[in-house]
Image (tube, rainbow, N blue to C red; front, top):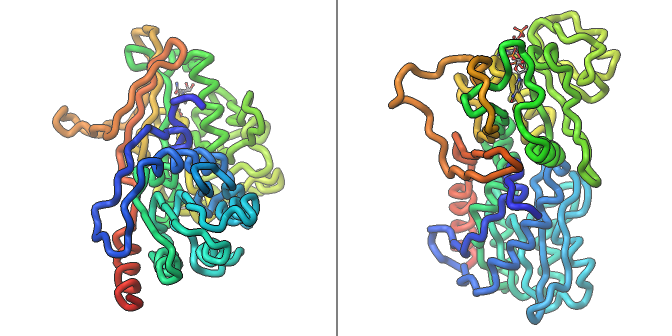
Length: 400
Ligand SMILES: NC(=O)c1ccc[n+]([C@@H]2O[C@H](COP(=O)([O-])OP(=O)(O)OC[C@H]3O[C@@H](n4cnc5c(N)ncnc54)[C@H](OP(=O)(O)O)[C@@H]3O)[C@@H](O)[C@H]2O)c1
């Protein structure tokens, strides 16, 4: 796996030391030295589910006995078996006495599948190490409580930051009712995303574009405005990725200016519009979303079960999103080229003051081919563990 980030968190698996969450240690055991590296493997497994599990989170699980992985699993899609169940199936009787590494608190409720906490208990697992607590109110610490009541050792907070980043879409849907938005652009060294003619093919290198295809493979939706469709007729599909699949294309087009013949207008695509004349699009199998503004549009995408959106421009739509405070994460390629004039990445002014410029957090800079990729966060990923932890503490106290 390369070190390039996947949106959100897919391959962004920095070698963080085990960092237990800063909470009460009630019923929680301390991490062991090898916990972080096993959790790293669980996170890598979970990343296979990115873009496929929505509205569920991506989850990975590794069962380890006597220092050997005896079972591995990841949640592949909503309705499919959970990571813990697959790892237990692979381990069989070897699960007895094993340690389970799980990227998200095991569920304790009957959803489409039986509770994973019960399955771990029934299999005789001795210890459970969890990266992040589940923000889902239906779980909210109850998974921990079940495990603890059954006498298992429980430890959580191992590689929690990486897990929370990987689960950004799920947490965003759960906490804000809308998807996590990653804005991606490619600009020249002098800050232009297209020439004055409107031509933007290609600003970035082949290596950068190949990486974008890997991102598309791991995200739920890819969004552009009608201006980009009219200028470039992009397909927005995933190419050159083994086992890859297309994210759902979303076109923001208030007046439905996009021609039906556009490559992006295919069955399963989404048209966000204000116009009533959309019958031809619907006959094509396009889902039509009517929304008063960008926030309502994102909420509607959330209701369609989309948890992550790669916003691929152009400047008018990206500027509108920035002004509405709807960009959560930024991925910008900077190409060693000069245009002198052209389009800026964000068409709408956010501020006239340098002191009010929006700073990115957790910035990472790396080379991709001949380009530089700068990534950072504008928003906090909704965590919600405080509520989950409070619920857990209350239940743990009552059963202690
Ligand atoms: N290098 C890069 O990274 C990159 C990426 C993408 C595009 N581009 C370039 O950017 C240029 C296109 O720029 P653009 O700004 O016209 O493209 P755009 O932002 O993709 O599309 C703009 C259009 O989106 C529609 N829209 C729908 N809902 C909107 C909303 N809530 N807020 C704002 N706009 C909304 C508007 O048309 P209605 O009012 O009719 O709805 C608007 O004119 C092309 O030259 C393209 O090649 C470069």
